[in-house]
Image 1 (cartoon, helix red, strand yellow):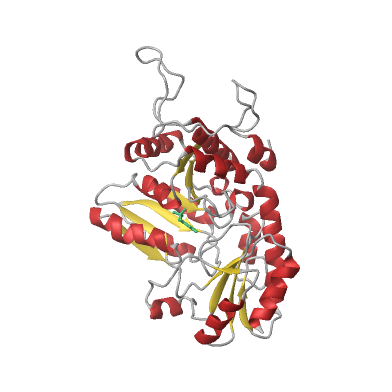
Image 2 (cartoon, rainbow, N blue to C red):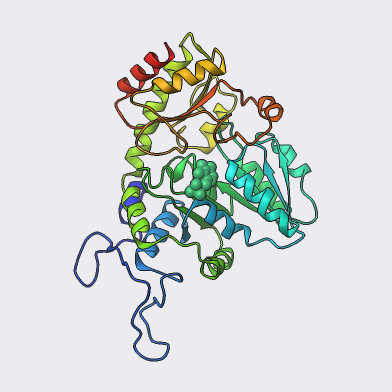
Length: 378
Ligand SMILES: *Cc1c(COP(=O)(O)O)cnc(C)c1O
């Protein structure tokens, strides 16, 4: 099956007992057993629930794998993947990471003497230089947040495998519609399904998809042992959201292009970051590893922090909020919100200035988004 067909059907058969075409919400904690060791594949809903199984199989299929696991949040999925590490291990990651990921590495893993080295995200050679004898994982995000630089997944996978290291790619920003890291050599794909996969800003969830069965089994063990699983209703909402992933992503991208071009010509805009623009430093890499450029656009406003405060108060269609990937347009101010905990000098050295805004372009009518941007910037 191709992508849209899988999004609608993978893991989902009409219910055998009633014929219902939608996977039921199996709102149950336990299952009747018929004698010692006799059950129908489900014993207790932390270990497994049919609604969750449908979601896990569907997300796995979208990343061209059979091995998917769903979690209560993106960070719960991360923690489960990180259970592959033990005290004394080392990890290599990039400097342009989701803040919550950085916080797990620095505030939780560090308690177990698991150390992380950070390299410049787009600088491929630096990943290899940072590898030590005890390095077990390379963890990257592409496109990065909020500057939307690209990391060469094929090249880093080649480095990782030469050193017998697993490569984890956080694919939240692209969704499997635009990028399939396992096909490019990654071993594990991570999603915050809170974002594009569910897509309707009404669920917090996460998923991990694996190339190899053994790695999947190890993380599945942790999923049951530590218990960060999604409930049946959240699993069902996410399954419902996934069905329209392809059409949503196409519209997100079309609107993002329109917004990126509009901002590029706007007199009050200093700089636009969108991998689809030929002026973007990683445009060629984007063309070779992605099937499209996604729905995120960042830009630098010409003005002061006070101007930015005025702008974000004036939006009428766009909402000033954290998060991304929903059908509605959201704008955020990374320097004070998602990246507020990074010291100013480090932030500014990376191009993350006080006048940078990050837009998650929704699927409203593009004309309304442009009109809203125009009136707020004016
Ligand atoms: C939101 C996000 C996460 C964390 O996911 P939650 O669902 O909020 O726990 C991880 N990585 C990226 C890139 C994200 O945007």
